[in-house]
Amino acid sequence: MLLISSVPIQTRRFVTLATNDSYARGAMVLGKSLRNHKTTRKLVVMIGPHVSDPLQRGASKIFDEVLLVDVLDSGDRAHLALMKRPDLGVTFTKLHCWTLTHYSKCVFMDADTMVVQNVDELFDREELSAAPDPGWPDCFNSGVFVFRPSNETYGKLLKYCTEHGSFDGGDQGVLNGYFSNWATADISKHLPFIYNLSSIAIYTYLPAFKQYGGNAKVVHFLGQTKPWSYTFDPETKRISGDMQEASTHPTFLLDWWMLYSSSVVPMMTEGYGEQPFHSGCVEVSLEGSSASQDPHHTEPYVSPQASEERKQKWEQGQADYMGMDSFDNIQKKLDAFLK
Ligand code: UDP
Ligand code: GLC
Ligand code: MN
Image (cartoon, rainbow, N blue to C red):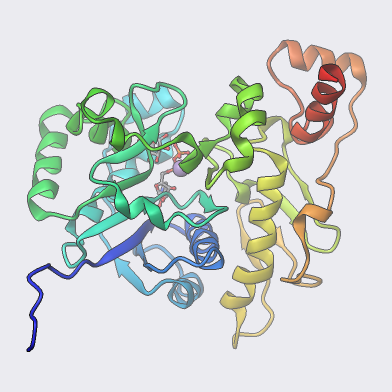
């Protein structure tokens, strides 16, 4: 007898967004990290029209679907200025993800996130599941969230934007306004922080990072300084840049760069000659990059600092997290102290 199932086909996707080349590089690292951790789900990237051809070609090698979308900008200069992120008006473009109605359930991930363990279990969660924002934990952070595409929801979100705007000028303000019962209604929609581990946790609660950071599943390079704001030397495996602006644990930053230089750059150049890629202050030489190198065996860049200057910086809340005050060094001190 032929049994016809009445259960609708479940199509599930990871979705990200990039409106320019820098974020497209981030999106590719994210895509590659999902693949390396053996996701069984397909990957979708929404791109804006300004993403260049080489980056679009590279993206199509990692993602199952590359979708061109119109860039939506909140144009809300005042609220964006409060966040000191005038560039984030375009994050309204993220809302397009609700229009992907040929999929039943999706996980959106910012292009500045990277998976460090398989996260396919996120599809067991319901809309709208997300982790608390580290700056205001009664809000969720919109860098990682589970949602159900729906034209009806998309329409309501746009209506919400028109009527109420966004309290931060970006998508996170709108989404927290619209899904306003997230904080109280259903604890199963609160993702553990390890699904959206941002640098801020390292700055503000180091003992918790020491306790739980090893279980991280998704690292989020939240904030103005992104991995691509640094320079990486693939030969020495050293990262340099403005270390005072360090946005995350040096090991994660190194992991990002190792993945980028060993797996993403070659995909963009395959068949097009050996052209190094330039973007803003980022330069990565292709020479010496190798996928087989283990980033954990290399020491990140350590910037020398006089101890008095270092003490003053600590007191001003500007520790050298990438160098002398790196987590590894701090951990050694804590371990010695706790012995
Ligand atoms: N984004 C983009 N182009 C931009 C700014 C942002 O495509 O010019 C997308 C990208 O997916 C990014 C997300 O919007 O990860 C949110 O921005 P960002 O990660 O910079 O915000 P943060 O997490 O630092 O607050
Ligand atoms: C947040 C989120 C990011 C969002 C931005 C603007 O900090 O990390 O995903 O796009 O705010 O609302
Ligand atoms: Mn982000």
